[in-house]
Length: 357
Ligand code: UD1
Image (tube, rainbow, N blue to C red):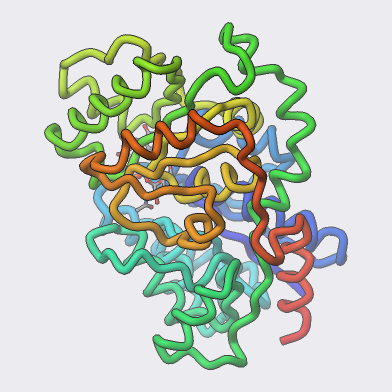
């Protein structure tokens, strides 16, 4: 079995690393392609080192751009690579522009596509990721879902049951594999913070950070939290640029730090009292680590984290912040929650499904 894995952006790396590890154990031939959507030390290189990913066999170097530019550049650069490498499967993960572009390129060449993390839906088509999910799931031959809601959405969109396999969450495979190393870094102490004595915040969704009014409102919410406990805020480059454009400085008590690598971020999240985020992956990781998560969005494509009780949607307007924060800070008995099949072995099931089709 010859697999081509395509990664492009930060949240892809952990998922591909999990699948590659399991495929290596099953002696599959593997080719890794990095589209270059994310690049540089902090958005790419550190993750390859942290996750023991091999250097990409092909670096497409597409870089930043508009959605059409990024998608088109991935397609143009990937087509000859697929033709040359002739994989049995192109494996795509998540919902970034590189995911949809790679799925479309492979499908048009008649190469089978497997989508890891299939079926998630926010039902909010203003999110670029939602469009990427819908397109990728229509094209993929094998739909590997993390949770039952994924299966239900795919069936409702007319995908055949025979193409859908529930495998669990490959991101959690990597969390389990790397948590001890992440804890050993003692990230909180290096920031002078006590375990469970601080909040961690991340923000990068265009809908949240690109409009000054919305970014200003969200920074105001972080200030509200910082009145109760220190807030550490590793800043994505998109958000850093937006904060600079806003020119309002940062609220007192909110510590902006550069974007972190995987191990450092997991270490920081693991020690936090509460997480505030608009990321999808952080909602899942917080659940499994037992850190209450307050999601700064109106919707989530990870509703299972809400039904498990570890995640609260507080809305982009922050309407739900005060009560949810009070609830999170009043308790110190948040138990880690693991939905079914989030057991550290999801990638093995991905590889078994690929080998069986
Ligand atoms: C992308 C994904 C998003 C994912 C996020 C994780 C899409 C549509 N969005 O959003 O789903 O949650 O990655 O981080 O695919 N930049 C850098 N260095 C980089 C990459 C980007 O400085 O390595 C800056 C550039 O100014 C760029 C901007 O960040 O224009 C946005 O990058 P882009 O890849 O377009 O989207 P993200 O916001 O990172």
